[in-house]
Length: 410
Image (cartoon, rainbow, N blue to C red; front, side):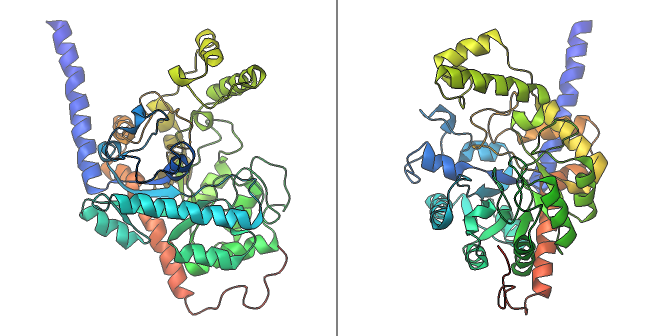
């Protein structure tokens, strides 16, 4: 009898928390800052955009995906920034060409499911589409190499619906340094500062995920609009170059920006990061790819994994990052950028796909987050950033392109 009462006492709070999360996410659905489905459709599904049935569970495909419509609905996703990533070592005009192809992939996946998806470019679009029950679809360019050093290309991306650009990916540019490569620009070069200024002028969000600390500081010094980190975590919790130190978290929050937390275990846990590095070293020595996990991994890695268990990364680990960012930068500075379909089929326990967001909100609710803070995390904060970026652009609307006279040194 006593055991039954204890179990009932556990179940009732969980039900109450779940009902509370449902109410919050019904009012403010999740707006996720980063999903790599577009590249996965190209790379693992043979660019068969229309033939890939997103109305069914895609985790069971021969090359599984982490995103589909049933799981987006279960995850209470109301808006998604689809990344148009291309490899960071893609050179010159080819980078522009590939980016256009990836923008086309996003437009095709939206067109293939018109009752579910609709293109959006403004905060007002997101609000309108979520009221209609559709998933607002936005576009983010994931790397400054994708403009090939030309502001005209940046402007044309904006005209095609691109909402943000990540200034670097994994390699430094001659105008902006990456967190995972040797510096070339010393932060932002003069041209890099012009890129930021032109993004402010045209109303494109500046994204500082992937950039070096020096680059982020320069961006915060020159941008007249709030910035985002579309898929980044707290370095104080997990020591990875891609994560953001506390001084920059404070500065982002002070300028009204948002850090959107990534669900890749390598950026969530220092222990997992070390385990994965050793695993990758073994895979290289065994001549097998390292980017598959669990039963789908190559046989040598399955055996390696059995002998060296994967360190635990859970919903609580994700919540630790959000708690830390909220303490340091403020609850107005947190968001979600799960990086699904860019995290190689992995993710925290129980959070392997886009259906997982309510689990995270339940964890935060149990930790004492208010309904207002949960709603701001879900989407209120990024909507505020978008509206401010739009307002800054409106004020500058009469100004000519920044390179109308001289673009300076690239």
